[in-house]
Image (tube, rainbow, N blue to C red; front, side):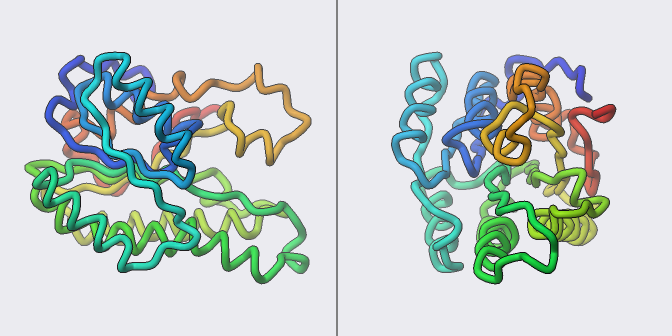
Length: 248
């Protein structure tokens, strides 16, 4: 799957929402999905970054994306319900979601975790993801085949010292995916997780400031897995947590 070679028409006529689409893996995924035929809905909190990704897609000949400026930290279930209804009204359905947006918080001993930061990270990484998914399911059910990809981490599978807040949020992500995958087993809507591994992003630099970024893969390097899980070639894959860099 990490060596997957996607046909250029893989995502033709598909409508895909990408969260955290302004930079890093989210921006690269949006541009890649557009290259393979998708109409992308770019969701993020910084309009200028979303506009830059929009321009890159249009200048490369992709379908004109939609932009949704939204900060998950402050969003409520009603915001997601309104967004979902707008998607149905404008596009008629939703063929895929990439839940890419998340925040790291500070790495610290568990006893020193700040209560407000804990709530902020959980609201963005867990509550926002859950409430958004709930709101989008009716639009996803209108597609012939739909894929929802959650972003996980190795620390969401085995806890790691000093990563408490982020790790717990990713354990929750895995649980949400598994629950939904079981509920939708043998249906046209599927749910999986991707662990990107160590990738050259701002979040990685925040977590490992002394690391040489040139030793890491770029977001473009790991896109084969993102294409595979979003396209219909993976229509029988459900409830899996897959690694872009299994040896890292």
